Amino acid sequence: MKLSKLFGLHSVQAALDYSPNKIHKAWVDSGRQDRRLAQAVDDLSALGIEPEKADRKRLDRLADNNNHQGIVIEVEMPGELSESDLKTAVENLSEAALFLVLDNVQDPHNLGACLRTADATGVHGVIITKDNATGITPTVCKVASGAAETVPVYQVTNLSRTLRWLKGEGLWIMGAAGETAQTVYTADFTVPMALVVGAEGKGLRRLTKEQCDVLVSVPMKGQVASLNLSVATGVLLYEAVRQRLPDVM
Image (cartoon, rainbow, N blue to C red; front, side, top):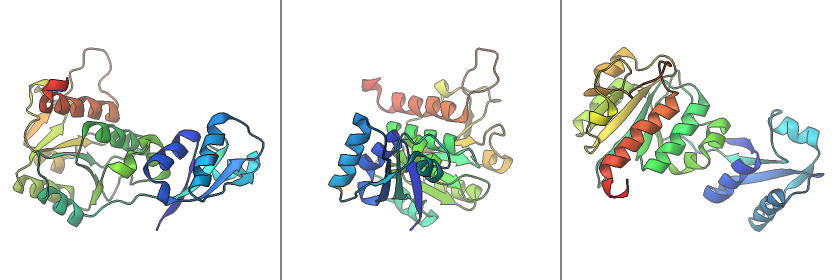
């Protein structure tokens, strides 16, 4: 069991909403009075967790000098799932698969944002690499706003091998690459698929790209060369939503 600190009213509320049974301890600012903090304290007390009163300096230390808004909690972190878990999930799907694959993504803010979008778009799971990549951290959980608890995250040791296995299971592998002429809006997102997005500033690795059945790009009309990784991922995933659920778009 891996315990870590979360801080800030938004993160605490997400933990209360999505994983209250994983909260172990809490500290609150003894000198702060506001409605949202009082409500969080009441919610924690209802779970049988009486927050410990602490001064600002102690809370600063607990939150590594980040903005904690007067509250810090200790939680059991969600864990990454295994390749075996991924195989079970794929084999048990009863609808067209939609997985998000992140190739050596190292920024926890990007992973957290991608998890949040994955939850919103109904992705069946996020696949990450074990080496040279971020896993689930307190920062990821904070940015994900609860999605780290709701979206399965599968950690694999050999991404090329995993993509080959997914293709063998009937999934179409679609890679995001800015240099390709085919755009996201001319691709078919209705088939069972895994969408692969590369690392910040580097894109897809060569071996990863070789496993892709098709490469697509997001059209860029301005002067900047590319979008932020998590923003581009959102554009791609919502095109999947548009094509799969045309009646609501």
